[in-house]
Length: 72
Image 1 (cartoon, rainbow, N blue to C red):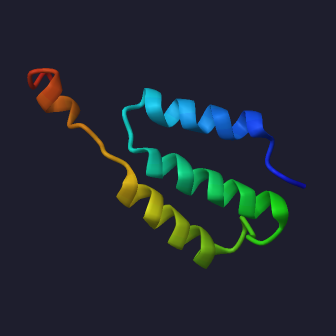
Image 2: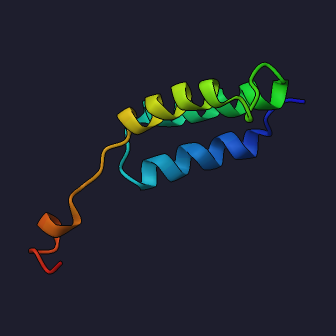
């Protein structure tokens, strides 16, 4: 089974709308393709840890306290 192109497009749109780097979409799509093709096991903790580490590293997070003027 291959990844539906609509899902790839949705991931790219969501990443762009969130102001993230396009590489993040590529990593997410690669992981989803690996799962749907059977070459990655979503229940394998070591594979999930490795991929999640890559995704967390590639995600930029803005400090809500700084952007909102320190309300929290």
